Length: 106
Image 1 (cartoon, one colour):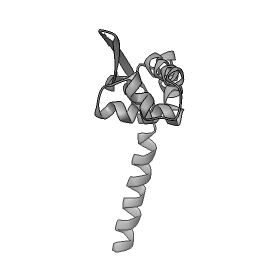
Image 2 (cartoon, rainbow, N blue to C red):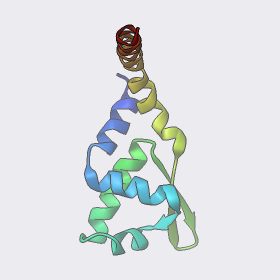
Image 3 (cartoon, rainbow, N blue to C red):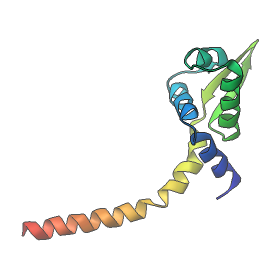
Image 4 (cartoon, rainbow, N blue to C red):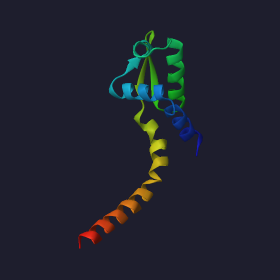
């Protein structure tokens, strides 16, 4: 597993960071806006954002004095690529289930 994939999984390992990703999926937010939604300090939220940024899952844009955080959808690509390896196991199992069901119906 490459570093980018490891960083993305590390970022998604924490429930608070997963919540932040879900929030940013619907709208761009400042650190202040995110802090208002959690029972933690601004510094703690900033640390979570740094891990998400390091994982390639969000981008941060400076607009004047504000830093706008937004989801980086392509940051999920390494995670999806890694997980897609396991699709073949499900495909095989579902194909076998289909054969079994069809065999029982005859």
